[in-house]
Image 1 (cartoon, rainbow, N blue to C red):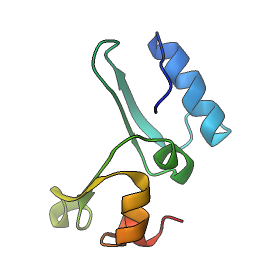
Image 2 (tube, rainbow, N blue to C red):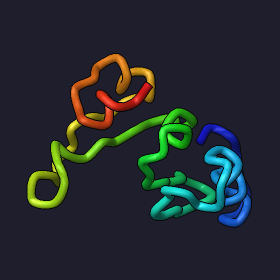
Image 3 (cartoon, rainbow, N blue to C red):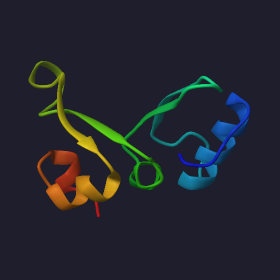
Length: 89
């Protein structure tokens, strides 16, 4: 998320506003105020607000675990090279 946040609570509130529900489809939120914010989610609105996406795949479970895509949300939609990209508008 490209907006600066100062606390983990503030980040969670901003994510809740994006998805319009408390932590819907947000599996884990980690913050380090001097480095990065990592949000693991499949919610399209959360992904659309990301600066960078790393999509693991190509499938789930034993079929996953590889970096299938890395780039901006716009690049993910344009590439349509992963299941996430195919289903993201």
